[in-house]
Image (tube, rainbow, N blue to C red; front, side, top):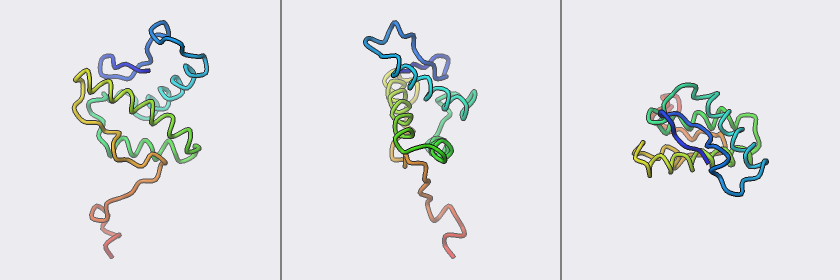
Length: 114
């Protein structure tokens, strides 16, 4: 589980997560490191779908599909919580390719129309 604190993604204290194994905590920390490495100090409210797709592309370029899916699930859960807390209005994790392959709109690429 993640929480938003000062518009950044942070892992919550283990004492507030009932029945979380050490392995699960390590998965959360891994996801958090990946997100923080890519987005640095970008507030979650400034992340758009295309930004998050670029993150998935970057992250998925050398990772197994299962790893990308796990990290995506953690981020998706965080975004859902942020929406419920009214910190953001748009779920930027929806309708994306989580396997690191960007499906580009042909109208946004002038070479695709040739």
